[in-house]
Image 1 (cartoon, rainbow, N blue to C red):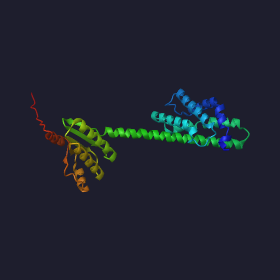
Image 2: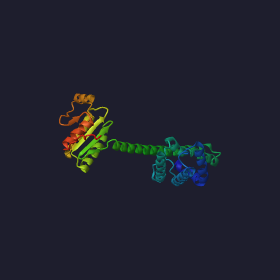
Image 3: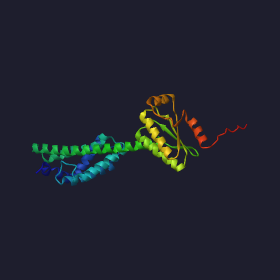
Image 4: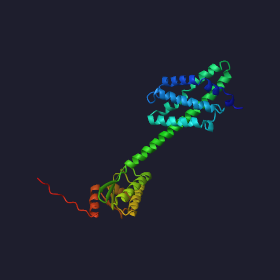
Length: 288
């Protein structure tokens, strides 16, 4: 028989659930946990749900393995709480303290129930500490996963926003690139450009790298991949924004851009694109 089977913690959770809820909520409000993010009624509801689920889980006698099936509902509840906390801007410390702050109320009840047997009391406190620590660590893990998911989604949105494809003229597209051009961003950029080529039926695409701070071998290869993909879709590409230092770097790296038209500025590239598209731009005489 394990210590969990002999523990009185399940009995305490069942017998004193209301008292534990009130004491636990007082602990959190006193410590300021979630005060700026949760209303007291919301926090009380979260505490009540946690105690209800814990009470059901511990009745199995398993107080050591929170990965077991009887703890599924508790883990899901804590994961949901962590996601909500992350979205509200609650820190990871405050989120974990939601679980850890249950220790004083629980241990006070253990002292009341086992006033004379110090050895048993010590075992129960150790068991309760281990259980709540595991649940607290699970809460932190869930919080970190939620934050990482938010950061990843924001990064993807920023990449999409930082690679806009602009229609400059009938049959002419421009793709201004700003920042470092890595493999992931190249893929997004390529997909956006090819999609716009298909939707607009454009014949010329200008890739402007004025906002690219440096060009290395990887950046050059990614540019070549984009140009090749655009050509396969029937559009010619012009690379603009080739500054002197970038031109020197490309020559030094031995990157072959001989079959790709390059221009120093976006204006020069646009003028060439207009000419290739068969348009003529004339300056109208100013009327006085």
